Length: 78
Image 1 (cartoon, rainbow, N blue to C red):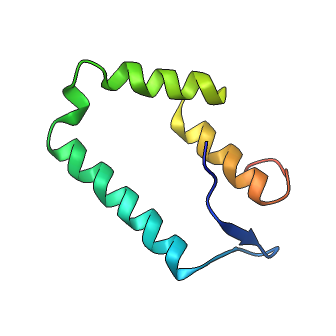
Image 2: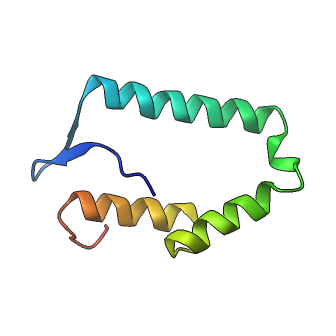
Image 3: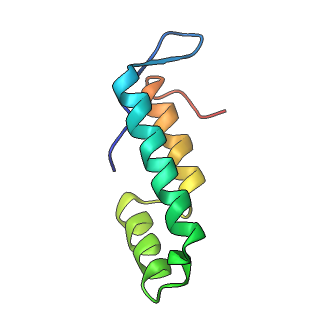
């Protein structure tokens, strides 16, 4: 799983403009695919499940919360 390139400063996250653009681009692309019905493809669920199995999580929210905790230095996710 690729982590976001951000730094935890004790109060919030600091990320570069390039990283923000990358995250927004990914979010917009995913939204466009969802609007286009990609979530109805035969392999959509299998691909999501395979990815989550590979990274050891049951859902994307848990994976994201863990990534945030790692960026905070391993602190438990809120």
